[in-house]
Length: 271
Image 1: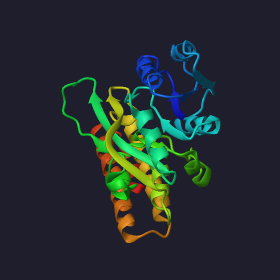
Image 2: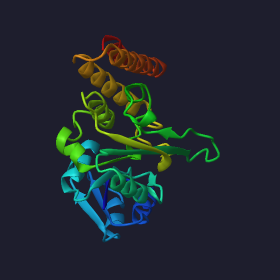
Image 3: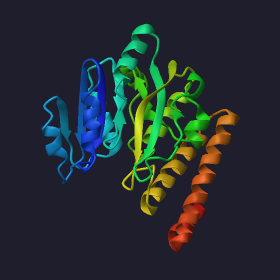
C-alpha cells in the first residue's frame, strides 16, 4: 500500500485535482490530508471523500503537517502530494513494482514535470529527483529538491527522523541534504519516468513567490547553509553550501532594493 500525505491550507481552488490523482492510483492507497486551519471550502471538499484520512490541526505548519502524516502512515511506501499538484496515474504502480523488486531499496526516485498554468504551452524542464541514482548535494543546494517525485520506505523516517519544523519552506531541502550527507546514505533506485506534476501559479509557495515569500525562502536557505557549514563536511559540499548562501543573500538584497525596503536589505547584508 502507498501512503500519500498532503498538507492543506485554503487550498479549495485547486484541491480537487490533487485528490483525484490520489484516488485514481492503482492498488490500495492511504491518503492522509492534514489541514492547518482552512477558512475556505478545503475541509468540506475533503469530507466529501470518505476514503481520505483527514486530520485538522489549526495553526500547524507544512512540515508539522507532514510529520503528523508520517505518524499516521501505515503502509510500506510514502509519498508527498502538494494540494495544488498531482501524481501521475501510474505512480503507485511503479513504486510498488520497484520496492517489490529490491527489498534493499530505501527510496524510489522518479522525475517531475512542471506546468505553468498561465503559459500551458511553455516548454518547461523535467527534473530528475535523484540524478545518476543518488541524492545529489549540488542539486539540493543549488537546484530544486523535487521531493514529491520520491517514494520512501517508512524505515527512512524511522532511522533518520522526520522534517525539521524550524524551517518554514526549506524543510524538504534540509531533510534531503541530511540524508545525502550521511556516511551511508539511503539506497536509491531511480527511473526516468515522470511520477509527479507540479503546477506553477500565482499562489505557489516556492515556484512563483511574491516578495514576502521569497524573502522567507532566502532566510530559510541561509539558515540551513549556516547550520550545515558548521559541521565537518567535505570541501566540495561546503563549496555548494557557500554558493547557496551567497546566492540567496544576493537575490534577497536585490529584491529588497527594488522594493525600496532599505531596512530589510541591510539585514540581508549582515546575514
